Image 1: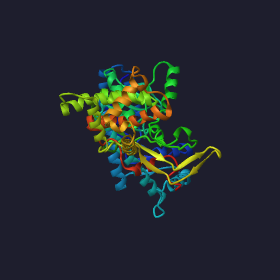
Image 2: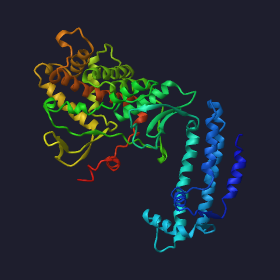
Image 3: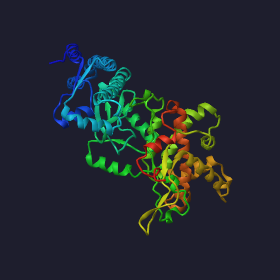
Image 4: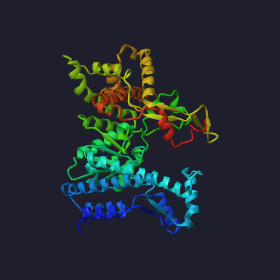
Length: 478
């Protein structure tokens, strides 16, 4: 039987009168009501409507329910405001069992919402005001989402996402066009879509997340074993390896520096738990970059990063420069010069200031922990590499563009150059390719940000927020 929302709301509003009854004798049930206090009836009504909505199969059917949700939220907002006004005027009474006064007082003191200058009755009323204001804030957010992103009430969970976690704040909903990512079955994230959502939209949403986080993701397939293999593989990827490979005698070192790339803090819309990515004109660019994140070694990464450069050359460099005789080396040289000046979206990592003493099997602190911008460190290394190449007996005669193209991309991609082919000799070719990749990474992310200016302010830059949200004790212990 279909719910008559008008009639249900009439009864519900009539039941919210001049009395707030917390007359529950059982202490555990009483405290549960206190912890999660909300106006009676609205959660239950939304649950009933959700059940009806869930039975709908198509977007057109679900669209009919949007107005019903709006009616409920508007009623809840109205009754929250009315109840707050009544509490301020003291025109509403409050009832609770005397036997539970001790538990109530202890709880209010525990959460620092008890004043010795007021009676328990007055303190409880003040607490209820706080809870109703929180309910009002949530209801306003729901109304905003319903107006701006109605597909939140239409979409259903589809594929799980691996590996986890996908983003920092688990309660957030991350949207692109008519698809979004959020928690579906804790702790699993899923993409939510509808029967009109394009496959390219879901793919682009995940590709954008991979770009902002600097790590590969995938939507689960029906093959459970394959999903596990991909999860295990992708969890091992680490962009910070580009910095590690720059360390002198890296392959002979026994030290283990526990550097960890942080998930970015994505800026929310109007302070709500919503992150909205505006439409991109270059969805394929995110696809190309995400593919590079799925290459774990320097040699294949070089080839895949170069594909991002080629996209940029086609859609930016050539239209901008209009060269009569296009040369790849010139385009690379142009971007290599531009990246040093660019202010990138940050990718932070924690330098804990410790290292693992292999003999003692313990961490040794060398300095205070600090938050470091990975993109800033890449630019520093790029300057060092340019200086090293300028002093190299053979490479000093070549331009940056020529080195990156001939001794990087071509050596990695082709097999007919004889001794010029890239090899897995870690101390020589492999490290040279890593140096090339540092430039290509900077170029790739520069092109991404240049062609997607809508993402300019999507990531929080202020480090204090990352330090506050960091789950380790590295900063507080200093």
